Amino acid sequence: MTPPTEIVARDIALPSSVEDEIRERTAKLTQFHGRILRCRVTVTGPGRHHLNGPCRVKLLLAIPGKDTIISHQRGGNVLQAIREAFKAAERKLEDHVRKTRGHVKHHSTPPQARVSKVFPERGFGFLEDPAGREIYFHENAVLPPGFDALEPGMRVQFTEGVGEEGPQATSVMVTRKGGT
Image (cartoon, rainbow, N blue to C red; front, top):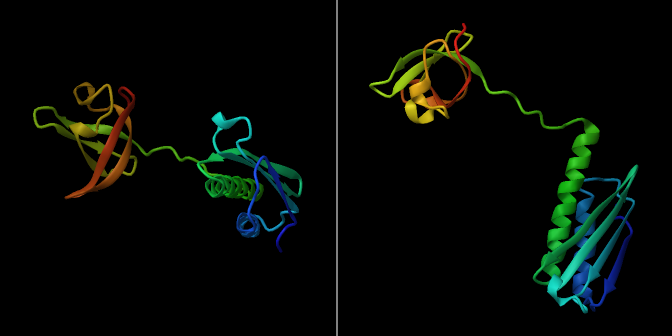
């Protein structure tokens, strides 16, 4: 259901095609959050403040338990500012829905390994992960303090990719020296 939409124009005359665009975009927002109670769109023209750009758009979305405000999206013209404001509203609504459903991104920690072999003269080495797999790495994949500082037994975090002959570390970062 399309929420009631109030359109306010300040220091600008909005053609009916722009008002239609606002109503269409408001209806589309219900795809991101189906319980929008109302939407107020304020479009402000340059007026005396011509240095702020041609126009600004502010959205107020009333949803159960929270009002979401997208303020002062500026654009080169009215339609561009409206598009930017509604894109920002879509992102904010998606984030709100994700949080209320408990679907928040959790950043996993990179896999851990230890340096098992280093061949400084040839510029590569091998890691051993906790499962005992051997993972190749090239000196260019080692983050500071760099390849020359690596020694067997050092603990590292790594990002794994696929190499020509099996697993390959695309980045290697020392976490601590020594140990098993």
